[in-house]
Amino acid sequence: GGGTSPGSDKTLPSSPSAFPPLAVPTSSRVALILNSSAVSPGDRRSHWSSQHHSPHFQLSQCKQEVTRAPAELSSDGVRAEVGVESGLHVWEVTWNPEHRGSHAVIGISRQDCPLQDSGYKVLVGGDSLSWGWELQTNQLWHGGETLACFPKETDAPLRIPERVQLVLDADAGTLGFAVHGSFLGVAFRGLPPGVELFPAVSSVRGGAQIVLRYLNGTTRNPPALKALCGLSILQNLGQQGQNQVDKLPLPPLLQHYLLSSF
Image (cartoon, rainbow, N blue to C red; front, side):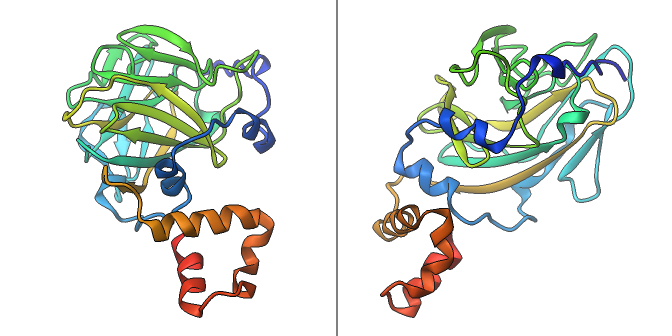
């Protein structure tokens, strides 16, 4: 397939330490969902659609992985099987940086976003029905135009690592992204309310393998006080202290809750 120019000489290395300084303050609702345990990997919201994809994408038997077949002068997309109309939801997209090439885009689409076109171009964000983040250039796309670079505080495009979380707040109409546990902020605002929205990707790289995983979601209701207290305890313990939960002066039931919920 085409679009295989790596362009890695223009990007900064993607060590985990590059991202925490770019993290932005976030709501307790988002912090809670990003720190919660993932739902079962067999959840249907982790499936790519067997109908809504370019003919150059092949689905695995479990539907969680797609592979783009070698194809010249073609841009190809796929969207998830299940969309959401409300609530806050997080998916993880796994895509090896060595197998992205140019025009490697992840984002959100409406039901009928175009998923195949001739030439090498951005499909997710290439029209008014989708919003995309082009991973090599870090540019945001919507309506066929580049809007800005994301994250904003970088001098050169960051080399985005293999795993990226999409954070969609369908109630607020926002889409953000998280990397290495750092929420990088809201990339898009003004997504349409009450409309089914789907994770989507587009690629021009032959052999690209892309995995979708639904991690968690919540309604528009405020988080439970118990969950907020649990998150606060773990945040205060820090990464190093989280294996000391059994030493906290808490009943075994609460210790189990802290260990099993986050």
